[in-house]
Length: 271
Image (tube, rainbow, N blue to C red; front, side):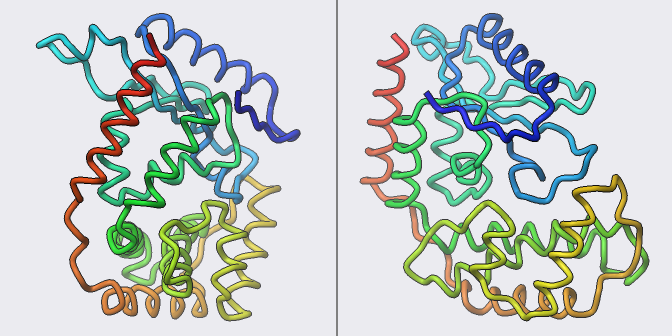
């Protein structure tokens, strides 16, 4: 079984996550096949007060899938004491994965794992590597990055500098995909992603300083988007509009068949 928890993790919060996952398993009658950390802690730029963002993938009982009254394909729990625990049903996750949704792919790549099955995670990652359209993934990051850019920095006013990462990370992912034309999946861990996309030195320096400050303080303060970051982000978004302009490919019959076979295997393992 998978379990990868950093030494710096708050053991009390870890126990709370484990406890909530146990309650969900019992109350919802689901099999949680993978539970990971998905937020800034997994991306590699946490603050001391960052939420614990646990995300999980689950399989329901066979009789639940056979009922005409289908249960929801998400399980949501309230945010309490910095603890955010939510999950997606396997069928929903597979469909989104094959459409190029980078969120579920990042979940599969998270370096922080609360619990999980190796064959489940590796099987889904293999499907992503075989079938996910890299253009669809790129356009996911482009839409995400531009939305964050326009929301927080469009008017050049002072805003919380921690918001910078939510535009910079998609821009770095787009650059990484462009520089690795044979790859479909960019690294989730932001410092690794930034190193491998080889940004201008000034961008690397500013990002590194902000990550170091963010690790020890609850607030980075406010300010305008630094010029080197602004130029980098805007250039990568503009380049992505041209480089990833073609429409994503239609989902192939083979991809659907592979996903269905994987789903049936996981349901069979559930018993």
